[in-house]
Length: 337
Image (cartoon, rainbow, N blue to C red; front, side, top):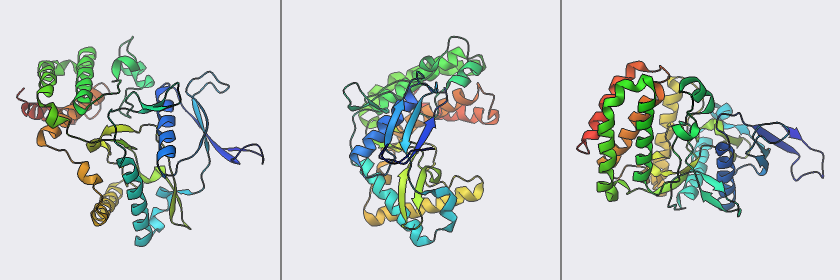
């Protein structure tokens, strides 16, 4: 927190967010681009961006964003005190926010950046699943980098995105010694990539929309007295996505607590959210469904290959790898490869 004397700034209190060196440049620039777009084009409450630097050429030698401080408490800290009416008001506000994001059509998949002209444009994809600098140094051969291990973008279609992902995963399988046992999958993955354009009309039948992707209660500020959401925070991994991927880690409505009961609470809230969307005639959840079984199979191939190349180099979830491989093969079969 930075507190300023009167008449120095429009804001008496600022929040300085200091980044590590995990995802140089792109994370800061993506968050600034997305928040700027949201502030300009919606009524979704976000902090003002007072200043930022996506380089380390500054007195603190770190990337940073300097944001206005927003009054409110983190919703995850108070949700247990809210009655049904209060929670219903919160769900309605979230529906309003999501509808505002949903009405904007996009023709590319990626994050948002501010270009040299000051325009907000679609840029490189950014995801929490990216290989970051510390893990690259620890787990990958010398010479590998963020650029060699992650996809780029923007991409003009769902097929283009999946194609880029699979080509990147093939390379990772070829590079990492722990993935050697998966190299027999490469010819079938290459055949899968070759088959995708033959079904492009069906596979690209999807809306491209801006999504927060991590909209849980820990990222929402709330004013208990008014019942209003005062800010939605942490937009750094947001971006334009094929809309079935708007909630990739199922974080929406999570109370940011651990345990089975927390998951049960999330599922119950989601049922209320779904019911309220239907009552209001809001179609966002319908638009989030895959438009065909083949489109879902395309997603599943990429998703389970990602799981293999994400966890095998780490030596994690080894008991699940054989099952993921079987699921890759089953979904590849939908494409005759």
